[in-house]
Length: 196
Image (cartoon, rainbow, N blue to C red; front, side, top):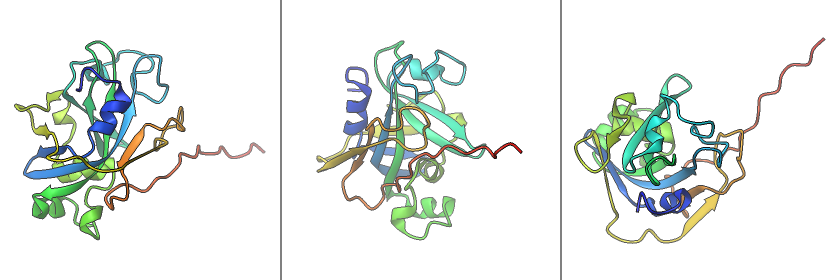
């Protein structure tokens, strides 16, 4: 599935999958697709291969972890054919095992549903950082991805979050009505102060 379907289909199909790392398991409830070279201006790989995005170019099934705002980490599942950059951002999930550890890692979460209701929160409860970048999700790495036991039910789609380009592309997918899905905030560019 990870290497044979378009990235938006992979993003939709990853809902309900379980990601296990460092004593915690999260059931994925929200994902976001990013295409590759030239086709998706919101993607890290849009302008070509760099040392940061090299893992996005394959093979499928690797974990792509990067840092944002100098403090949070985001985890992505690499998909698509080798040499064609594509990845699915893991935006949110429900902690289904290891809740005690998850709460230790996210002591400010007010509810169980808020433990991993955003990409930075999800990696925090799983204990993932840049050390997990370019590691396999099939075993042998710090995180393991396993398929769901049953279908997830209705899925919704909408615009992606926090991107300046192609923000209206409906490549964000979530389990409809799930309380662990992150709050949508449309990106608003910063305005420069008027010159005097």
